[in-house]
Length: 260
Image (cartoon, rainbow, N blue to C red; front, side):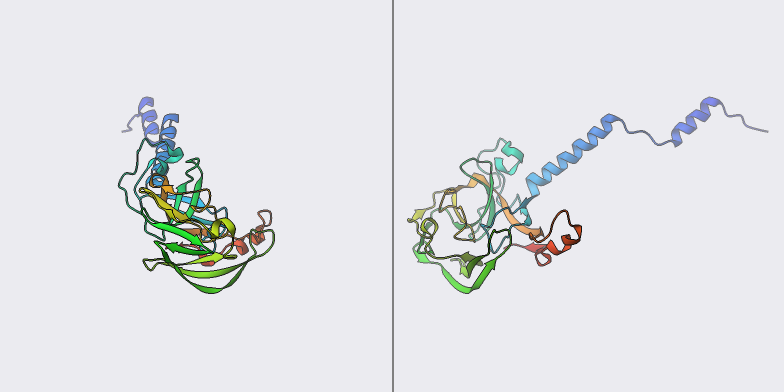
């Protein structure tokens, strides 16, 4: 005995076996959730940055790409895209430590991203005299490490003296100096850091616009995050039009390098 399957049942079975077509609404919903997750990660956890200038040599070089942790100092309006969050001050605030490398919004426009090292905390007295850094009237120790020649991303080679500087709490890091007699940056008055602000300097001491020059004191609200790790880095020896040179441009020793 043969079973008869109606045309309606055949069509029903066929429809059940066919994959459902995604509607335009489903597609838009997927895109919305993907963008939302990306914005939350970028705002609350990590944001990538590229180093465009040499103000942080030798620690950070032009061509370095790094992740900045947004949660390290709490959150302000500048933690979010276009600084649109209606936040006054900082939520879950934590103070940076002296020696931290921080990304912040330039106080003059509250828009441009800068990256420097925290040197002065609220209440500190900071001065640079003949190239030597003084914190609270005490000269910061530095040890000569040798001469360095910068050849990448410059018109002509530049020669620097490299020092290991030891901050008051014992934190050590490298700095570069061309000389100790650069007018504006190597000689400043005594500057007292106001409450709720920080004094920042570039590790490339003679080639950095920082709290000694136009940046001034950085309000705590302007902190974006702490530089944590270099995830990619390249020099200027290759060409985008010559694929066979790409591998040679990568600074392999810097990949996934943690910053302190």
